[in-house]
Length: 289
Image (cartoon, rainbow, N blue to C red):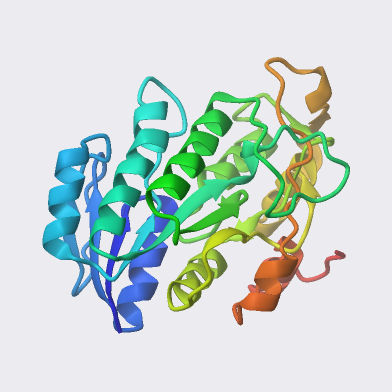
């Protein structure tokens, strides 16, 4: 078992990584910033602002983790670039200084979504959104500061305990609490948070470095995803309205499908598509996909 540090430990993915890593016997430290940490036995929690390179250097230098899983990010607002991009570079530099294995979380929205095939690990970033730009910048900074790091590109992350924000939005749309269209021409590969966390922990024990796509096996549109989530929560999806991403401004990446062939060959963890997850959890009795 290893000494592990999880940044963003109070985030949606971070909490599951912390819980799973502690459950299998790792010595776990985790950071928090804007949210109070949960009470998890054996986990050391420390407040950390990833925008501050000196604080990061001191924390990682004192903890001397063998593995760092960097999940902390900001999705929008004035701190988007300082937190999501520059902060990732600071974490990578500090991890490299103590010889820690680093797994950095990136995103499928680093692409413009114009390819007609799934994106592979060697496809260069071409972001068209502020968040995509920040994540692409983060990848470059991490690769420079820590050449042995793993950069994991993933997709929409969903779960049930607690419900994720993407699923909550779909349920609000289905119930009429939010007026919105879900796009039929925008494709992603959503991944169950428990599967993603397990894959990251398995990857932490390997020597692989570089970019790796880890996402769900099913390619679904935003509209299809919304309907599936509504059904999984027992909500009638009939009132979910379809729309076209191509007609909206600002432009959004439409095809963010990730090719996960390499990860499927490398990992024992099953990267289930959303249809398999919902079947396995008994959320929907009869499904196709």
